[in-house]
Image (cartoon, rainbow, N blue to C red; front, top):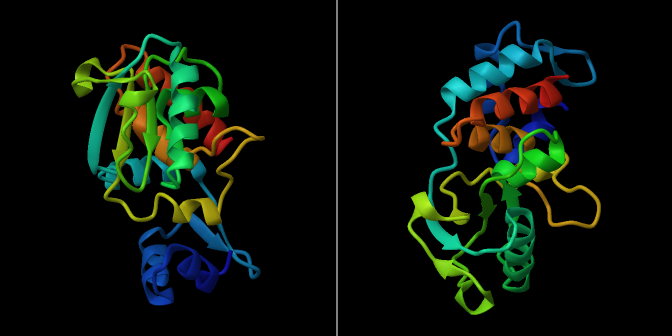
Length: 188
């Protein structure tokens, strides 16, 4: 993509994109028809070190159904409320690079969704089988305009880099290894 296309997609200025590319010297190159990542693994590592995460307000939910099913159902319910759900975390990682059995679900939404009338019980975040989150990062949905965010007819996924960040910062014993497998898929 050209700098102007990237700036428009992210709601930024072309000057800000130019400055970012200068800071990424050696990791991106101008092909004449647009910029491409020249060293994707190092670029992902740098982004991970610099990115503070989506943050935001998180709500924990508990349900006895399998994690994938409850995450898909929560995303479907959120879509009915028109809060533009994006699946992330273990469930999205499993769809992007199957390796880890999802232990918890995560769905980004633009505003709160009450799932209590749909078989979910509010739960502390450390006991939740599903987390809905209203992220502070405004680019979560903008990234979908410049990359693949959906697979088939299922609920849309968050950007692969966001999914990677969520899995990498997961608290499961195998989160780091699962993130490594996902990173290979992203940078491959």
